[in-house]
Amino acid sequence: MLKIYYTKDSGWGAPRIMPLQDLRLHPAAKVLHYSVELFEGMKAFRGVDDEIRLFRPNMNMARMNRTAARSALPTFNGEELVALLKKLVSVDQEWVPHTESSSLYIRPTMIGTEPTLGVVRPAEALLFVILSPVGPYFASGFKPVSLLADPRYVRAWPGGVGMMKMGSNYGPTLEIQRQAEQQGCQQVLWLFGPEHRITEVGAMNIMVFLVNDQGEKELVTPPLDGLILPGVTRDSLLTLARSWGEFRVTERDITMGEVEQASEEGRLIEMFGAGTAAVVTPVGEIHYQGRVIRVTKEGQKESLAQRFYNTITGIQYGKVKSDWAVSIDS
Image (cartoon, rainbow, N blue to C red; front, side, top):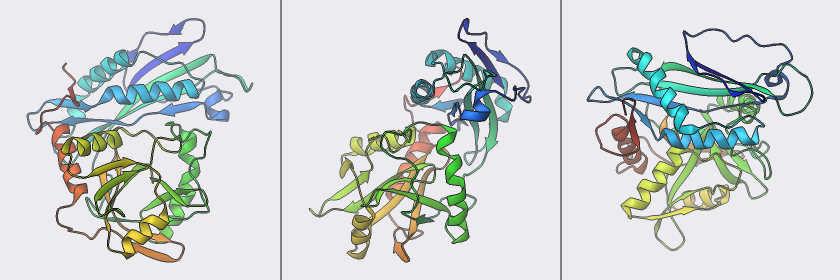
């Protein structure tokens, strides 16, 4: 693991790579009382050429710094942390799986450690990074999942921190995820407002591929208006789609009413989640206010989700050359 301590008076200390170990925290550490913390999610991939790569790490660093500023935690030099991540992965490179179905998950985390109960900005912090080999996010593999869309619950709201990667955004969702599973669904489709705007699916961004009212194919995803996380995978898929130039690509609000109507009229082509953990996850159906909205059928031909998945993983595993793939040796 990697550990770097920070104090207000001295700034960042010397980084240390060491064997994985428990943390020692004072019971009054601010992270334990006021959720003064943040995290990131990244992966290292062993390519078909045996080279180990990271995927767009600078985007994670930029987001981590934005979250740090909003969390009253210290910011840092993103390029220097990327260099440290490369070194850490290099030290533990034998843990990077030798298969295209797995990868090495990287979890950078920052916590406020000052041992005082005052509700003020912490004067001490710890940035640490741990690693773990991971397989496919969903045990079922690349198959459509079912979603529970319950407008009684919201993940984020205007003026809040829904666009930040803080643990406090995730803890309150766990009980709703349990309710979804009890109803036979794999994930929660988070809605907002009286119009039941779609925001995110589980811990992923959401994309809807449909034929719009003008009769043209359109890929729609909610805008970066503060309610959703600015995902690295989200940005990558939008960039790819725009470079292909085969259909309209729009960042706009989309409601459950629009999705349901498109499904009823046969205009809903696909929906899928996008995120680091699963890359792309197709949606099969949505359970919404006592109704079931059918979306993607398993084995659907010419799936945009599958095309996105193949392209992104092709880059990550070195089959497709791209500046997005950064070697740990560079």
